[in-house]
Structure formats: structure tokens, C-alpha cells
Image (tube, rainbow, N blue to C red):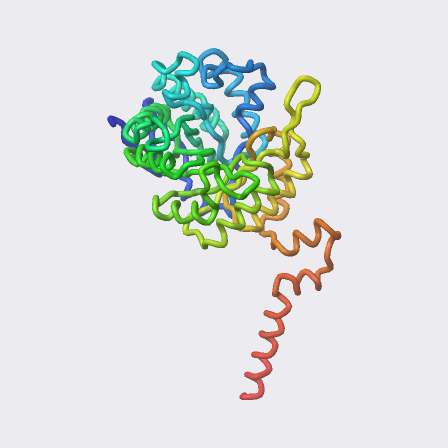
Length: 357
């Protein structure tokens, strides 16, 4: 690998700063709002079925940047590059495997330009999706080949100016390990999310708690869940992560409801109100980086931003009660959050001190 990047003050090939490190920004903020969907929004912008989204960084760079800009305008603190299928294994399906470096580099540059002109600290996360292959011995993909293909993609992303590597929608622990090992060839933070099904496991059988253990073993800078079934099921994964008392930030990036076929197109059932509720619940459960996945539009992210800014330190129990039954009184809220007992304890301690005096 010829390119090395600082985790907090990375520079692109043009020598321009690539923005704040994720650790620095999380140190300043209680949470970070990520972006929404890439693929489903590009389809709405004209991407054809069977067409590689990554090809748009060359053919329709203006539309790719418009999507990034729409999420920044909606309030995202972090957004992903248009490189989910950017390994040679995925690009080969479209005859683009010879352009791994150039496509990933250009995608990162387009994202970098949007972030740098935002007037605030916005993190560019280099999206790295699965290869689409199963590693040996269950499949045909050799581990060394997997690592090399991930490294090839990540090198292009790093050269283009990303702030961190964002490995996403992974199902198999061995593929995750290969991607992380490839990313460790660069001095840059690494986050990873896995996708969990309705049984509460990845396709290869991993549970959220088991992933929390891997995140610690792999020394990830953030980990969590994306895609899957919908926001409700993804919340179950977040709770599983938090039960494991993780040492690094938890990520929640849920689909916008359930997809259905309507009037010749795939639409997602999630509403602005539902995604706002999900964002609050994810934050209350302990997630530090919150966004959306398939079907999540800029208007959903804008509503999530508004909800989180209005209530950025929510209590999970209070939220659950108020969402189901309506607003609690101040006294009831103090009891639910334990503040009433703290006040009572303080009063008892004060009275004891006065008696001793």
C-alpha cells in the first residue's frame, strides 16, 4: 500500500484537509446523524435496474453530489460514498473491475467536495460493502484474495480523501475480518455494520452480542447494524449491542420500514414520524451514530435531525411510555428516570448532616 492517512487530520491527494476525525466529533457531540439510502435514492434519480450505482460517479457525478448535498442540507454529520459495490468482485458483474481504483477515488473526491464546502465539520465515510462471494472453505473466495480486493478498493477511497472506512451490510465474520485487515493497512479509523434478519442473526448466524465481541477483538472505532428488516427489528440489535457493554460507539442505520411493490416501483413503508421515533429510541438505547438505510430519503433525515436536536438526551422508558400513552407529567418523568429517588436521597443526607451538627 502506497498511501497512508492520519486518523484525525487526513489529507487528500490534492493536500486539502479531509475534515474532523470521528473520535474528535463524537467528543464534541452527544450523537452524530448519518445519512440515508444511497441506492434507492439513486433509483429515484434515474438509475436503471442492473446498472452499477458506482458507474454514476463518472457518468452522472452531478446527481451523486446532489444526493450527498441533500443529506448534508438535511443535517447529516456523516455521509457515505457511492461505493457500496466497489470491490473488483462486484464491479466485475458490470465489466468495471479494471476501474476499481479510479471509481473509488472519484467517488471519494465527489463526497469530499460536498463535505468541504458545507461550512461545518462533516465526515466522509468510505462505503465498503460485501464482495458477494463466500469465503473458503464454504465458498470459493480465498481469504488472501478477499483481503487484496478490499485493500484495492480502500486504497482508492483513501486517495480520494475519506475520513474513515465504513464496512457495511456484512453477514460473515470471516469476510468482516478480511475487510478490517485490509483497512488496517491504512492509518484511518474503521467502522463496521452487519445486517441482521428476522431471526435476530446475520445470514451466517452471528448474533448482535457476538458481533459486539468481534468489534472489541477487531478494535473497531464504531460498530452496529444496518439494513435488515426494518427499524423495529434493528432496535433489537441495538439493545443486544448495549447489553454487551461495548467500548466503542454503537451505530444504528435502519431501513425506512418494509419495502413493497406499488405502481411499478419499490416503496418503503416508513413515515417521517416513524423514522423520527426510531431515531429517538436508538439514541435513548445508547446509539451514538444514527441514520437510515434503504428507503430513507433526505426528508426522513431532516425530521430525525429535528427530533434529536429537540430531545438529545432521551430516557428509553419515558420515550416508550409517552409514544404509547401520551406525555408524562414532570413528577412522573422524575420517578421514571430515577431523579425523584436521587432528590429524596439528597434530602435524607442533608437531614442526617443537620442532626449530626
